Image (cartoon, rainbow, N blue to C red; front, side):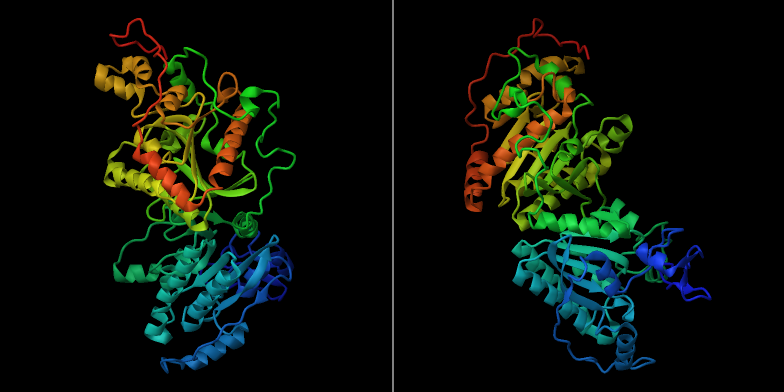
Length: 586
């Protein structure tokens, strides 16, 4: 069962031989394994009916007919007449064409399905397939249901000439209408998906999932090799390569496709229940009589707390990371990639449920151990990280659901590749777009809030700061190096910058302080996540009651007067050696 072969049978018709590893598998076992070789894990190609059976609830699929156009619009003949090829394909597959459309449920959640069949003339897209995809989108619009598309195609159908080509525009238009209507679309890319299908509807889903081992691209490997004579790298156009280059959200083995679709459809329907037995406002085992965790509202650090101590506490590698906080939500489906270059692991995000409400979350991600910190660039995003964040914010706007961001970064990644990739532009576009989103935006600074790299995820209707977090125009070390000419003056710079949560509240730069457990979030991560969850829930309840126009009006007023009307500041923490650089003791 290679990427181009069909399974061969042994002398007994009840045994199927894998053409990759040569192992023979009893056909019933192969069925239980979802047509995946149990010896080498190779995914055999499926027909549309096999795929539907695997993905949807039993007996829930109802096929939706659509008008079939002329069978041979060009009167095309090569070595065989096109009409004869069509009849042979129909006889072999039992399908009218290379697409099956209908409605079904996945884990009880309704959706419209459009599933391609590679065994029908290589899954090529002619007028019938184009009309079928458009009909599926129309049905999703009519019934206000998510659309799930499963692709398997060599591209446009040459025998229908330019009429096949224009199906790319027809199907892309259909997907655009779904976006405008705020309906979720999920495209599952299976082996193979190429040509005009990839360059139209297959790439336009809100969520792109590649099945493990799928080959996906525009030009096929043979065409590339013959046309430009480039040597193709290992894994080229494979699912893993797509994920690494930020072109798909997820890569899943066949056995995990159905559970993933069920989770996505549950989020689309707003059908995720809060954690059983846990109050919406408190998602941890924190004691209800602990005022610092269970009572909403701002609080302040201890009087006279040294801002440098706050900075060091915010940077403590034991503090809960973005993914730690997201694990405390009712549901989280991570999505990957900027759909242009790569997936930046410094920013994580996806669809989530908070107290039964579906949201899009975007968070910086550091890590606790050195290996993960290095792999994630210490949560310093590259341009593609900000483009991923922007893509997810746009998805939230299309679906009409709130955006939640968790900020914890020293700043944007400073490097040659980042500069050449348009770091400033990516940050600016993220700030500008989030300032005009027609959905609520709530941001929480959970640790470090460093410069524009943090603001790109912190331009919001409600900005909250954890008690031991900070937000600053520059790092204390950077400020000290520039103004004091010595990085050792970082503690003095921290005090001068007024970057702690109480100062941010007094300056009007933040709206609320999220309390932390005594000693900081690192002392009780579960309680810290509960406090963040509670504050988010309260803020979203208030903001979701507003119309989009009200949100934009308030956000405009907020940003138009940003920094113009700061409140009174408490006296700064005095340093006995304030005129000289203060040596760091960290």
